[in-house]
Length: 229
Image (tube, rainbow, N blue to C red; front, side):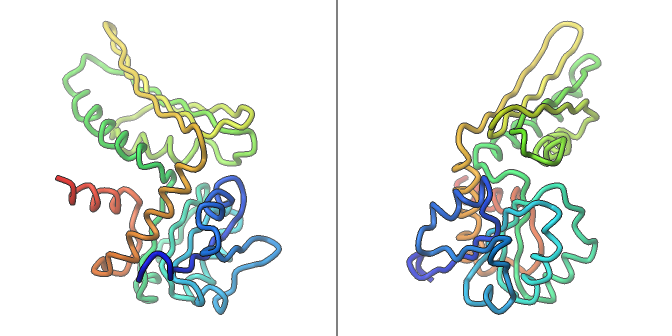
């Protein structure tokens, strides 16, 4: 399937979804609160890219499962059903869920995992993760900040701030009595999240040997990364 023949359901046309729609142009079929997605309409596309708030996720989830098409989810602040992996397998499709689709953020993930392991050599390290986002972001801390702690594998203080139209700033501070270590990621433009979501949608369409089920974005990134080394 060439990129020219693909059709993408873009569900949610907010801050990030609108970037996805812009990047895809005529290949995008848009759904929002005024044009709600239905299984029948979704089946006419090859893959869905979803950026809706957690409050809207359940309705979209049911329609997508009925449609049985692959999906890339950027929704945060939603408690995913425990039986979701089985239901996606039963639908014979593949979903990817991510809190942050920046490719650069996944390079950061590898660095954080290294810091977490290496901190065992430090003298009583303390960990602080701080995130800043725009004032309209409803969930705090951000899904990405929670992911940073998971990647770190250590207990960390997590703090949040909401300012203006900040796209996303995440900082890690590792402090001991004798030194400090800092790691920072800042998104300058939401197009990085749109580009990553589109890349992921294309990857799962093109790699048909990936088994049906639910995958974190990090798994998909690592599959691609392994092809480079």
